[in-house]
Image 1 (cartoon, one colour):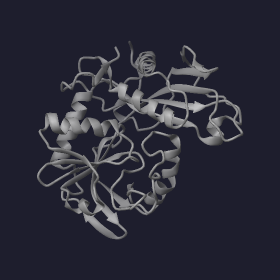
Image 2: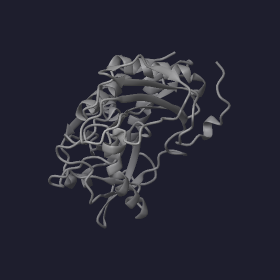
Image 3: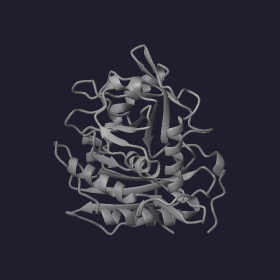
Image 4: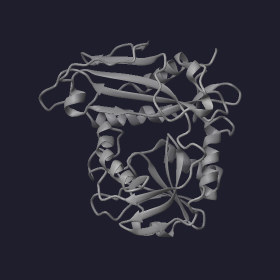
Length: 341
């Protein structure tokens, strides 16, 4: 198989149209067989449920080329499970979890020429999503839906290494206490756009959202979970019913405990504790870990001891171990690395 003639080492984190995508439609109470198609356009009625009442959800994962030449992806079963939870919460039909994983395999195989080579620093980003497609004018769930998977080659989220970022404590709430913060609904991300644009305009890289009920506990950012490292090397990550269950965060908890022998705590984290942590970061599919060097709380600066120059030593070990597992350089737990071809 001949790879596409791209400058793999200099790809940005941007969308690029590839050759194939997967499409399956839900109608009359059942999903069709699905197919790999070439058309990247989606044509819908002007009154489609996704436009009127925002019935949409999505996932994100990556395919990698390992050192021995295999194409793999990381824990797609968890993406399938999380999308099931999203669909159930949004009154959308669940796309069967086994078919989800099969569809990922099909679309990656079809676009194998777009999977970046090992060592390039690039990966194939995989975006499964579902939308309501039939006309809905009354406030109710739609009757017809489309499940699609697109793929696009992307470079590393941070060019030249992940430098520590500066974030602020946001005055905005990301999610309601009993809302949709725990699922990957498109509407959650729409809610965060104003806050991130405002943060960027004021010179910050991201927002730290506190719990909307009491504003005393750390929640997450618009698209990533927090991780903290204590002075004695303990891995701590916030727990909340309105936090998205990040697959990267759940994987890092295992890496910390089983590979690096770090004590792990998944619990509520008071904002008042943040000043006492040694290292801090955000974790997610795109960047794996984004280190945080400074948190600004309405003018008051909390400087993380690991500094603004590079990842702290524990964060670096976590990052290197997890990416090593993803790339096949380190043997991961059974089932984590899913071989596609």
